[in-house]
Image (tube, rainbow, N blue to C red; front, side, top):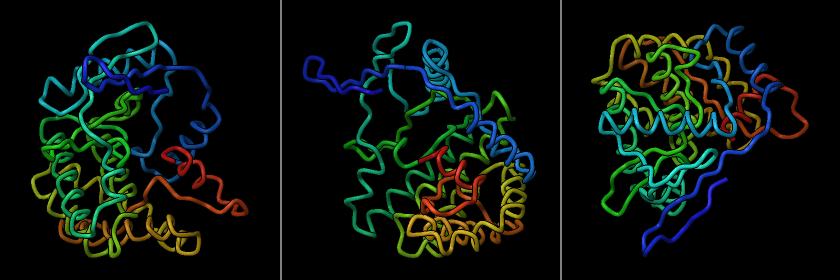
Length: 267
């Protein structure tokens, strides 16, 4: 739970780490990732209470040490952190942006993510709701109570970042096939060859998602657009095929259990 506070005229955020088990959902995601042969889709452990606070505190310190824009820790307790404000969420900005502004913002966000990777880092869940934009246009990152590197390599965690980023931003484009693909291709230009190759392999294995999501509603069609966009981006780098996104908004009467589990993970 996150509460907004006013501290002597400055905005701060009190983040409390409660309980709640996700064991069954995480197990389903783990089995799905293994069956598909895509290690970057493995879910990290779900921490609660003091463990979640410690994980987020460690991740914030690690990223700040390599000059990634993340909240500063203003105070701490056993199960809470007091965090500085680094701007409104990217999702909030995108919802009220023109198509041209949305393209610019997602481009800046993709470049910021690529810079994190160039410094040897990774984010974990770079959804639009977990990215921020301040009054100077600087991109920041929030929400780190889970750590993908506990179950995968840094390279796989970076691949995971691109999968989640593409899935989470495709809905803000009218033509993600053309627009998002150009953004991703440009951002991958300076990336590690191992990450580009791994992203292509994941795309190849998950190519079924585009046809599967075609009939499952607006968000699902947006995910299909992300798949096509990353196909084009992959072509630029001689990669294989297509990408899965992790968030699909299925109709209640659909019965694609493994995909629903992945959707719930990011929705």
